[in-house]
Image (cartoon, rainbow, N blue to C red; front, side, top):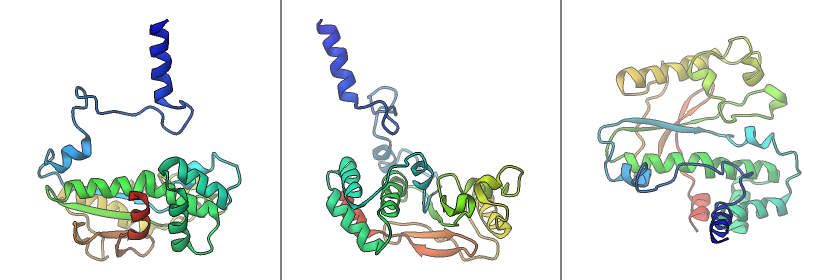
Length: 238
């Protein structure tokens, strides 16, 4: 009976297996001996240059699987589930988003939680040990009536210059801008071959550093940005 009790306790500690990504790598002291970010920050990858980024609307792809209405109360409740600080986070995103619907604010929050903030943490960890470059992919797909926006994986047809390949229009629509594919594909090829991303005929791609969160906003007209989110990041840290 004690063995069964131990199994039940282990299952209970693991949480609900039907939630988002219930199984993932863990730091066990063996196969994964150290926390990866801590190891990188301590210099485990010296001289490794990185190009790291996220899409502006990452969560919209996953939100398609959830048809339930999102109001302000639901927004606070869901943010509280992942942070214990739901009300403050909702206020922070409302300050940034103005009159945007609660569903859009939730998209912004989960995009930050699962994509933007992890990308920034990796940049923070590696920038003292190698060249770090950052991007935000913001092009808004017209597909599905615009529901996808700059959703998860939206950048991939442009990275590989396949935006006009048969079947890809389901994701990017029938008139994806070739100029964006030229810019994104060109930047990735330049980084892979020369170690520095560059935009053909575009602005210079400055390094991301602790002092300046330089990034390139990837859209039909690519532009440099400072990708800082102090208000919402402070709420997440709280």
